[in-house]
Image (tube, rainbow, N blue to C red; front, side):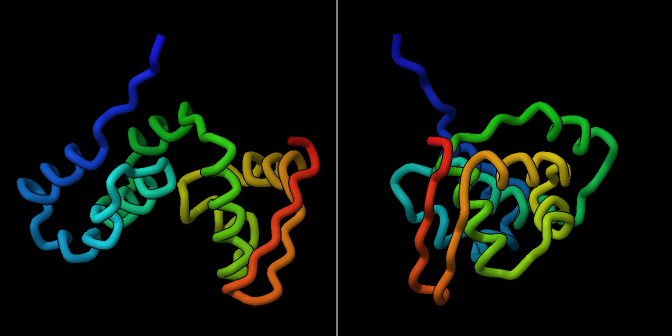
Length: 124
């Protein structure tokens, strides 16, 4: 059985056209991709809804699941931007415990410079 993913690109293009035409320029680089990854979806959500933090939004974020690639991209973002676990958790709407468990489980990252990233997966 083939698992189907939502057509994120179509969904966000429609949202930008109907509800957020002023933010379309901010999302153009992400929407030029043929297929959006989970990390791209997180970036678009941050652009569109970054000031909207209600009780329901936080409740909905508790039940999210992330692929290994998305987790590694989030942790790489943390290293590149020199964020601590609390700052990263606030940026992506995660718990600090989630970030800590990801770091323990998945990786040791050495960033020599922002263009040269080496990832060591310890438990993959």
